[in-house]
Amino acid sequence: MRVLVTGASGVLGRAVVSRCQAAGLTVRALVRPTSDTRGLDRPDIELATATLCPPHGLADVLRDVDAVVHCAGGGRARTRGDLRVNNLDTTAHLMEAVQQYAPNLTRFVFISSLSAQGPSPTAEPPPVSAVGQPITLYGRCKAEAEALVQAQADQLPVTLIRPPAIYGPGDWRLVPMFRAARRGWVPIPASARTASLIHVDDCAAAVVAALTRDHPSGRIYTIAGGPAVSYETLVGEIGAAVGTTPAILRIPRFILWLAGLLGEVSGPFRARGSLLNLDKVRDLCQPHWVCGQSEIEADLGWKAEVTLASGLEETAIWYRDQGLLE
Image 1: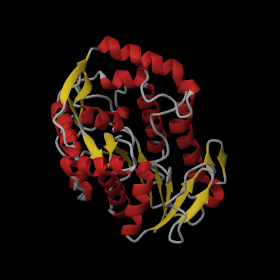
Image 2: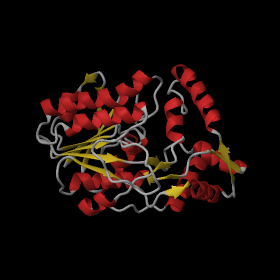
Image 3: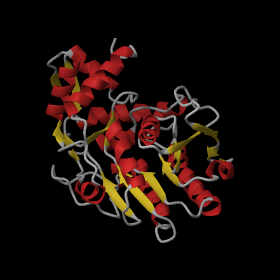
Image 4: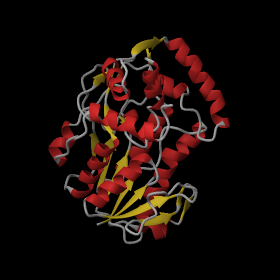
């Protein structure tokens, strides 16, 4: 099976490429002309340069492809318009290209986000809903992109995966928490209570399971690395990974909103946008961001293998090696 992986130079994309190769699949890695391809420019990987928005070179990229994993996108962008382009427009253009150049795919796997489903009312994992209740622009973009993919479910075998927060080596989003833990205290939103997380390798393994195991078209799966954890537990595990016992500093909502407003204003002037903006604050202020994994376990036999403690320790080692904890 030849698999096209979009967003192959990203953290999850690279993990998917590695997992596909380990499963004996042939990988064609789609990257942009400006992408950092270190580690992908190897004889055993078909490196393909094209763009999804505007669509350019997709006919060649999709030639002789058996399956597609759409990892491109993400919640960090300079402007709100960029956020829609990165997550919605890219998906629309890719689906159009698939219909035109690769209508006989054996599987199309779309990596969405738990943001498309929305926060949970309690700490218990809610049932997976085809129609979510996103509360941010990023979540709405992912939900609209899901609808585009689901619209093809009768003509094309499609699978949608909604991961929660992804962490692991290569991902920078937890760097501030690790640095704070080393200082001895970690700021946490006052209203935050529980969250689900998934290690990047476990997420990639779920993608490979969706590619290689039979299941009905149109299925939506949430995945988690285990039971939801409290922020007290998360901070404690991060502290253990960096050799400290940090305290928790609960941040009032109004301070977060002020910080988010500053990030919103400064984002367009930063190369990759701001890590904290009003949408991100809206996310952070929700008490529960949790999901389960019973459906994917039953259908595909996938189970998370990386424990939170070992995953965070591995992440800390990578951060330390990159000089990010200094």
